[in-house]
Length: 278
Ligand code: AMP
Ligand code: FE
Ligand code: FE
Ligand code: ZN
Image 1: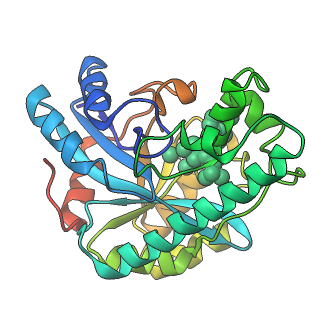
Image 2: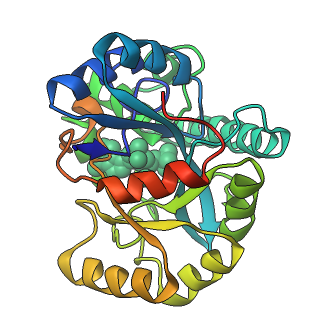
Image 3: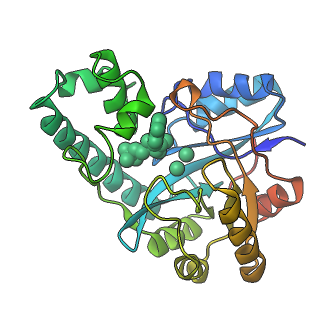
């Protein structure tokens, strides 16, 4: 079984539509794919119809923006009830703040570069969860940056003059909201250094006490020494261990199926989640 539980479509900052993403997952030889757009479940129905056509299984999920000890952390929720009012209200607040924040960043950039809000909106489909990748795309279209990664490394980097933070839910609260909605919360790329320091043991313990189900250990942004730490911690705290690509289409080098989750772990996620595999 080839199972990849973390991907993005044009509903957030991926470059394939939800239907096309599932087709590519089938072509990559995956048996199960998880769709986890940032802060949005808008792609679920289109992806489910595509999965049925392609004969592969879909795990419906979302990657939620949270904050822990002043740092940005991402929490995957699998198989929650999409109509849950608590989680939906919180997600809406994050998405709204993402828009305000992106507008502020564009305002700052516009003082020095040929970019405006319309150019950023032109890079998104209606309803897209907006983020720095779309500002990057507008900078690329304007000839300011050669590609997304270059824009991230320079103009869009945290700590730089153009960077603005957005509201994100406190991580333990987010874990509780996910559980209340029947979802299975898994901490995404906990060893990544791109967003400051890796999430430390104490903070993971704190999320675990709130109901965290697992850690995404096999992810390209977790270096080997971090994976070893996270494996040990998962064993100590009795957390599930997942592996995923975090595929973003042409927006990032990550390839579908480059990291995988094993079948017993998927079964444990299915047993804990409110919604079925489709
Ligand atoms: P934001 O959530 O708006 O602050 O933007 C962060 C998002 O940008 C993450 O979810 C990543 O998927 C994406 N991202 C981060 N670094 C890069 C990069 N070097 N190239 C392309 N996308 C990136
Ligand atoms: Fe992303
Ligand atoms: Fe992430
Ligand atoms: Zn992701």
